[in-house]
Length: 127
Image (cartoon, rainbow, N blue to C red; front, side):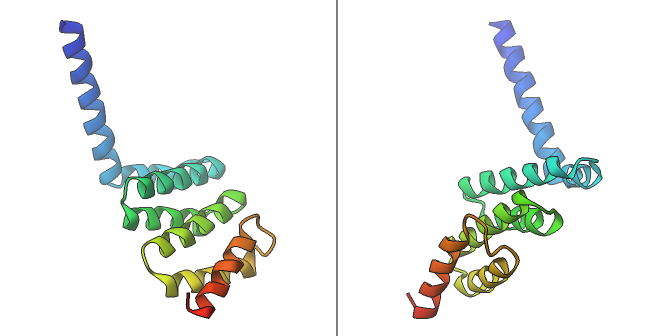
């Protein structure tokens, strides 16, 4: 029983430390100084998706936009497509339409480009 209580104390301390590390902005500073941008982009992208799944849409939009604009490559394109989806889910259709047009200019052959084109046609039809 003592080992279990000690385990719970350690887990609670670790959760408190991680929460403090993230909320203080130190984790973002760490990502900015990390030498491997491919790692950073994946972390920001997954973090944005996790925040969206947890219902923290504003934080999710910030993370996904950061991943889409700060980095290059497939992860950046995926993050931008996810950013557009979260905008739609939050009811910001005007901004989603604007971002969709920009996305299609930069990534016309992306795997989600056809889906975004269809959604843009819905916006223009007023659906």
